[in-house]
Structures are given as structure tokens and as C-alpha cells.
Amino acid sequence: MNASIQRVERRLFLKSGSLFALGATTALGLAAPGRALAAKGKMNEADDIAILNVALGLEYQAIAAYQVGAESGLLKKPVLDVAVGFQGHHKAHADILAGTIEKLGGRAVMAKRASDYQFPVGDLKNQADVLRFAAGLEKGAASAYLGAVPKFANRDLAKAAASILGDETMHWAVLLNALGEDPVPAAFIA
Image (cartoon, rainbow, N blue to C red; front, side, top):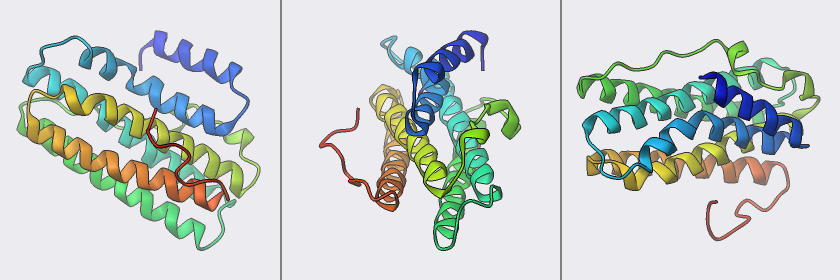
């Protein structure tokens, strides 16, 4: 992640009072290069690869976040089982994205260490904190995919990204429901 994105993430973190907002901010901060690329207009295969790599980075981030949550000792069964299941979905997304990037002749980004994401581990005091943070990440990932889907030059890639978008949105809804919040808080994803 480049330094300017890290500065934006830190600034937004300081302005944000909730773990949910931090999760969404972190995911959207990572997706910013993909959104900027997608906004440029006419796309080509190299641009598709760049967007796929941003998506792959988001998936690696989610895998690491769910690992942190699982290892925190704060998640109780059956919530822990659901979180591990969601992590499995993200691993499947990452595998397919990395494979697609390679098939297109690109080079897939590598996963970072969990500590490189600067997750707010110290702020996670209970199960609700972990769920709220995960929900923010899922919302941010859904928003990032939503922005990328119409920009793919290859429409098959757009369909695949839309499928992942649906999964991210379901994760977000389940996490909100587990928090006792409205699982579908709005008619549209922002």
C-alpha cells in the first residue's frame, strides 16, 4: 500500500469513532487505486488485471482480519464458526482472483502479514467489537466491488466480480444481524 493511502487511512481512523467505520475505511482505502483506475474511462486487459489485483488485496485483508478475529478469543460459537466460514469464502475469492490474474498474464499481488494492515486489535474488547469491525470491512469490500463491476473491459470478469459482491453483501448483512442491527439498513449500497 502506498504512503498516501496509508496517510488517508490514518486520518480517517482518527476522525472515526467506530470500529465499523474503521473497517469500511480500511477496505475502501485499499480499494482507492482500483476506483481511480476504474474511473479513467476506456479500460483494457491491463486495467482489468490492475482492478483484479486490488480486489485480491481486499480478499487478503479480509482473510487476515478474520484470522485476527478468530484468534482473539472474543468470538463464541456459533459466531466463531460463521467467521471461519466467511474467511473460507475470502480464501476461495483470493484463489480464483489470483488464478485469473495469472491466466491473463499478470502477476498477482502477494498477501501481507496481518500486522501490516494495522488492524485496531487493541480496540477489540468483545465479540460485538470484532463483528462491528468485520461488518465494516465487508461493507467496504462490497462498495469497492460495486465501483469496479461496470468498469471491467472483460464482461465475464464483471460477472465474476458481481458474484463476489453478492457474497460480500451477504456477509455484511449476517454480521449486522448478529449485532442485532438491521441487516439491510438501506435500499442501496453506498
